[in-house]
Figure 1 (tube, one colour):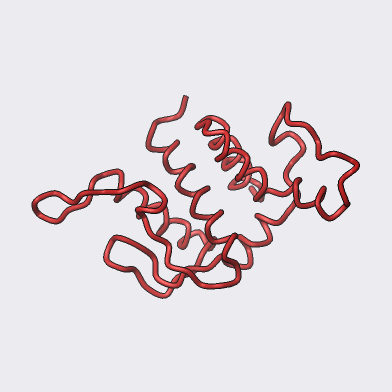
Figure 2 (cartoon, helix red, strand yellow):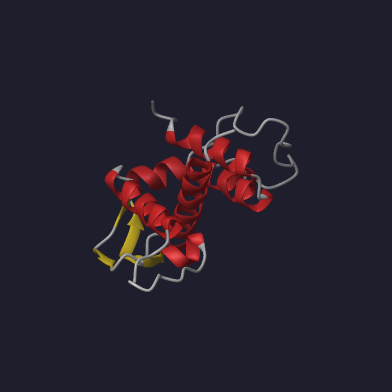
Length: 149
């Protein structure tokens, strides 16, 4: 089992990438609260470790060329964020066959375009998030992050 902060990193990354993919190619504000949940800063106005870890995840995704943004909104959001070409292509690409062992293949009766959509990395991320399983989310995100390595 991974350390809890690594599992949270994978989940935060998954949620952020899905939000940006759903809005692509529009630029959107990416709020930490929408990803990690609400946060109540302490009496000094400092955010929780959980909030800051999520914000750090968003910055890391930008540093690794998966998203671009214009500016930060304090430590609460990324202003005008959008997927990079690299991330869009990676998320739209067919998922590895071994990514989700035991998952049924898309119904062959479905139109080819829909079958193709159901076998992409972004679909695998959405399914993993929907399952709520930290292990599954981590496995899918690792496969996607390590795809080119």
